[in-house]
Length: 116
Image 1 (cartoon, rainbow, N blue to C red):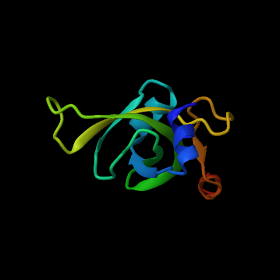
Image 2 (image 1 turned 90 degrees about the vertical axis):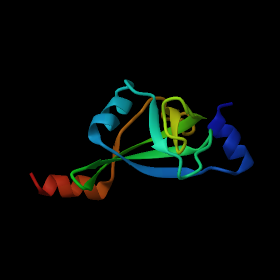
Image 3 (image 1 turned 120 degrees about the vertical axis):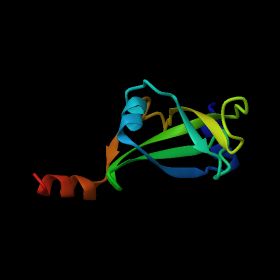
């Protein structure tokens, strides 16, 4: 049982929706990055969900992915005390998603298609 499933059993799932720039979003999608360094102003905990929303040029692109926070680490030697390293892995939802996938909302897809 993974941390997310254990949290679900307890009935406690926190979803943190955060912005992420395309260069970092794509690295996570391509499995080239498995962490995020964030200000810990949301009280992140292992087992929480991170909804990573791609944000570019001052607006959301409509692309997002979900990740499970595996651990929350502080590195006081390198980071200010308010910042943490979130170790991430793809969020498994009922066994249907087993790798990072990018999603686009139907509204954004329609908007993009009209602009072409």
